[in-house]
Length: 186
Image (cartoon, rainbow, N blue to C red; front, side, top):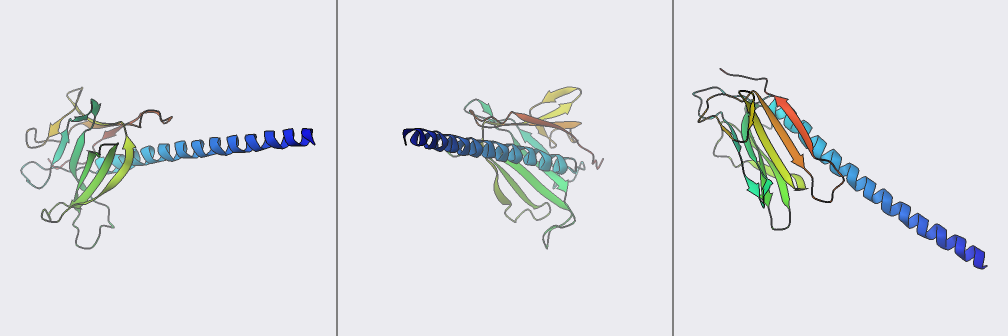
């Protein structure tokens, strides 16, 4: 009887250790999928970024910010939208990626609206709910710069590097993507 109790106790502890490990691995995979999916979405959208000098509606702006010493860039740009835009949308959309701090964590929000309907409020939602850093850099004359504004430099950057840093304690590594901007209206 004592041997049976010992075996059942060991199996019981092993089962719950296994379940806890499985839950941690699932959470890690979901976090990696969320970060990788966001980078892929940004790669597709940034490769369709569109700017034409003289057109006040079109823009590409990167703001260098930080929250508690960690990168928290803001990115707003105009891109050619997919063919399945909601009714009333044109071909160009104004997209934004903005970091938001709520006292507990930093999140990355994505917003979009029709580029030519400036009075309509953008549709905004959290893209990644917890992160430690979001850095956007632009390639200009062979150097990476942390700010860009087409109002000051009327052209798109050569490329954009996006780096997402998951929360401290996460097993997901910092991920980066370098995106070549393909569209040009010059």
